[in-house]
Structures are given as structure tokens and as C-alpha cells.
Image (cartoon, rainbow, N blue to C red; front, side, top):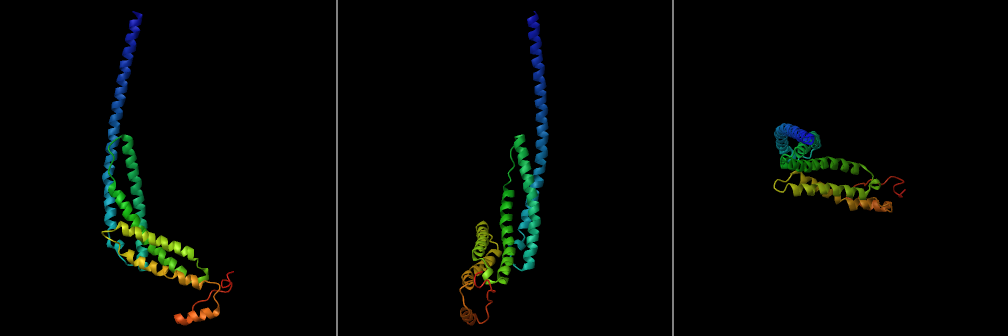
Length: 231
């Protein structure tokens, strides 16, 4: 009788424990539903932000070929502002996706955010390249021939060209008007590389410079003393 009573007590205890577990699981399930609902409520706001950014990026100013310094500077400023907003959006999307994975609910489709990221990155890089290119050309033109590092110049020009090629491949249906303009400028500078190489030759004598002066119809700046003999 004692054993039977003990067994009955154990069974009753297990039943009670099972009831507690079921209650806890139900409570957790209810809480997860609340959390999932809260996460789902944030999705429309994130998608609305994405739509607004895509509309802003479609502004004709970002597709123009207006390479005037003031215009380039203004567009670069706006793109830097947009970068901050897009970074926040990407962080929000990453956080929401992480919540959905933990809560084991269907993951939201963020293809529009991915498309926005690609379009923004390419346009940003083109306009940033336009600003950097004008700055570098000014530096090169103001420098003495003998101080120019042709290898570095070629590397930088190749980087500019790589950015433009990526833009051409990305925007096949609606090309950026700035790309061919900037491409021509880059190619024109690349054509000067052999000339710069020749002019920076330390073996050039004064008679060589005089002949080149006659060809171009003006005085070509000579390397300063010390650069001329390669020191």
C-alpha cells in the first residue's frame, strides 16, 4: 500500500509538472507572437524609407553630366548625407532579419533594399570619382614633371576607369550621363603619360628642351635643379 501511494504521488507530481510546462510553453508562445507582431510592425516603415531613398536617387541631378566644381561638390555633399540614412536602414534590416530568424517566422524579402544599395554605391562612386579626379588633375598639373610618379598616376587612372566601367555595366538601360564625360577626361590624361615620362627624363639636355619649346610654341617648364640630375 505504501508503494502504491508513493507511485500515485509521483504520477500526480509529474502531471502537475507537465501542466506547468504546458502553461510556460503557451505563455512563451504567446509572447513570441507579440514579439513577432512588433517586428512585423517595423517592416513597412523600413520599406517606406527604402522607397523614399530610391525616389530621391532617381533625381535627374544624380544622372546629369554637369561636372562644374560647385555642382559636383553639392552632389557629393548630398550623397554623404544619404549614405548615413542608408547605413541606418541596412542596420535596421539586419536587426529585423535577426529577430525573425530567432522567432522562427517567415523572413521578409528585402530585394528592394539590396537594389537600392547597389544603385547608390555605384552612383556615389562615380560622383566621388569625379570630385577626386579634378583634384588629382590639378595636383598633377601644378607639379614639376620630375616629381610626378607615373606608376602612381596610372594606378589612380585605372581605378577611375574601373569605377566608370562598373557604372556602365550597372546602368545599361538608363546610363549615367556623367560616365562618358568623365571617361573622356580620364582617357585624355592617360594619353599624356608618355609625354610626362619623356619630360621627366633626367637625361634631357637644354638643346632637347629648346627643340620641344619650338614644337609646342612656348616655353616648357624645366625640372628644378637637383631633379634634373635625378638627385
